[in-house]
Each structure stands twice: as C-alpha cells, then as structure tokens.
Amino acid sequence: MSRELVSIKGTREGLVILLDPNREFEDLKLHLKRKMESARGFFRGARFTVYGQTITRYQRTELEDICRQHGLIPSPDIPWPFERKKAASPGEPARLLHGTLRSGQEICHRGSVVVVGNVHPGAQVMAGGSVIIMGSCRGTILAGTGGNKKATITALTFQPIRLSIAGVTADPSSIPPGTPFPLTARLENGRIIFNSYRSRATHPVF
Image (tube, rainbow, N blue to C red; front, side, top):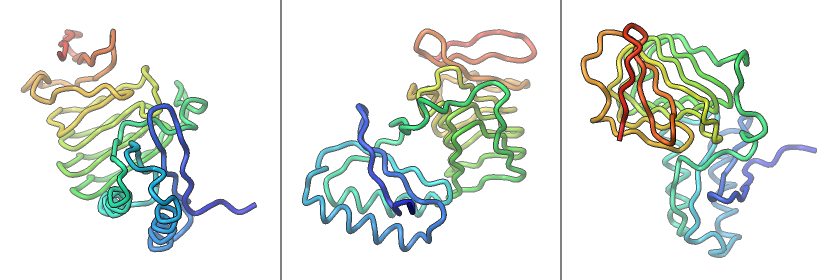
C-alpha cells in the first residue's frame, strides 16, 4: 500500500501533519490544500505542527500559511505521534551533519543530531533525541520533540534564538553569558539548566 502524500494525525496536544519525504514539494503543497478545503473548516482553531524531513524552513512556512488560511494555529512543540514509541535512546545512531546551517535551512530527525559546524540565526534543528553542535548555537534548537525529557542540547557556545527540550522553552537571555567552555542544556524538575564541562557548575534558567 502506497504512503499518503499528506496525513493528518490527531494527538492530545494538537494535530501533526506528516509529509511523505519521497514526494515533490509542489505535490505535497497541492495535496495539503485539497485536504484543508475538503475538511470544510473541521480543523478550525486546532493547534498543529508540520513534520517533513526534506523540506526547508521556507517551504514549511508555505505549508503553515495554507493551514492558517483555514483557521489552524501553528505550534512547533507538538510531539510527533511515533516519537513516544521511538524516542531516541543511548547508543542509537545519530544523524551527522558536516557544515554550517545558515538562515532558512532546517534539519528534522527522529533521533539525535550532531552538527559539525555552526547553527546561524534563522536556521533550525528539530530532533526527537539530543542535539550536539560542534560550534556556535545561534539558531533555533528543539530537542526531545516527542516528549523525550532525557534529551540534551550541547554546544561550544550558546546564543540561540530559541532553545526547547521536550516542549520546555528556555529564556535565551538567562543562558550563562561568555562561558569559555561547552555547555549542556538538560531538563531538571521541569526547567532547563546548563552544565559546564569544565567547572561542572549548574546554572538554572527561570
């Protein structure tokens, strides 16, 4: 049985719109339009997120705009349905990316992600597991997107636009400034804290 181009899954947190990674973007966009039109306002007011491993950030915005026109509300922190069963675990192979992620580029992966390079403002990494950035983190990082509270985010320097683990968002202005050593962000008691590899000091984010 062939996979549907666009499928819409309902969760307690909202709707998850899943895209077939093997199809052309224009086909996906057309199919999403048809689905929204055929729904005749059924989804109006619902929160949603779009999951597509092969789309760019600009393409994601185009698809979100289609949904907005039909009264849906974008919410990127909604977990993907399959992540609850397939959350990344220690030892699971990670997606490795060599190079810098620039504005408009986006990486989505079910497991963990390792970026050997920098993540610029306007770039985004979404991972069901942990994220390791062997460079500066100045973009948007969403780890543990399927509710994986054990996920972490590690970078040589932190200056993110947005930082989130399992739906909990950190205030970028509260991240320890000017730390000369790598930091790891993790969840503890429902809040994000940062650990320095050198000093092992813990810095809470309120």
